[in-house]
Length: 349
Image (cartoon, rainbow, N blue to C red; front, side, top):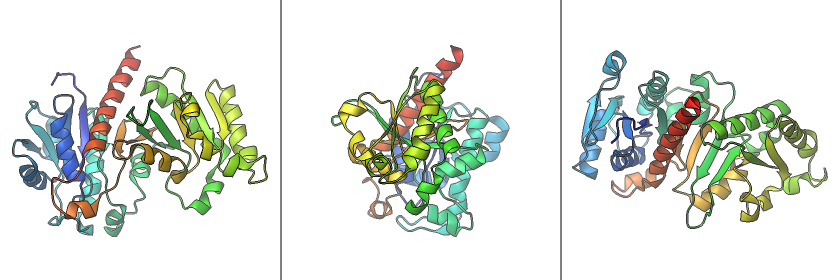
């Protein structure tokens, strides 16, 4: 592992799900490419690692030692675990709200580690929102929590997948709205937030993805992009004026396109990112094309954060270890590392 390898903080997510397993497997598999640092219960991860692969070696580090000395040196055959102790015994597949606050603590320590430059980026395994809420902490998701904790006024959720047998070029889909009930989406499509979203996408595609002149395609909200107002006026009154304003600011933004026809190769080959108006409008297509190999990225943060494209898979975890696929976690770690390198290069230039 080169001495300048990106240091990636990896939160292991809901302990009763597959997050700890895929985090261990991916970290061990990529230890020669990056320096992975796991955040979770050190004792539980050691026990799980022994069941998965007896060659996996972990080195526990207390939060107090981290804050006092920073990260210690670590060879390629040992992975550091920042200990975030759980409050209750883990039963695979069974949620326990007593562990909700400990899961949240892994996020807090990961944010702290990146802000203090102990780590270069953070990658998150899936967590269970209900467990954290049941622990007495209002929580709507990673994206919103990271924005709140870093005091970021607006962030953008984007999923991305790399080239594969079914995708001849990378596919990136960002969202104008994220975790909202469908009946609230239309009211949330407003001029200033939508323009800010396009500016965030444009800037991060340049800084973190190395795309000098990003091309952003925008979907309409309504069927047939409103069909000239017959099927809704959001395109006429908000979306198209925002696109025109973005273009006047020098951004290559096109649309609004009907969402049911935009996701075809003949259109996507000219797009670096598609901005969809709501969660399922954009992510259903991307997950169909790449589920298990996609990456969730939070744009607009003052740090790099990626995640897997799937949930906690409690049912799979309940069946035992050795069944979970760490593919998406590996891609998320690699993508975070590439973003670190591109951002560093951009800062030099």
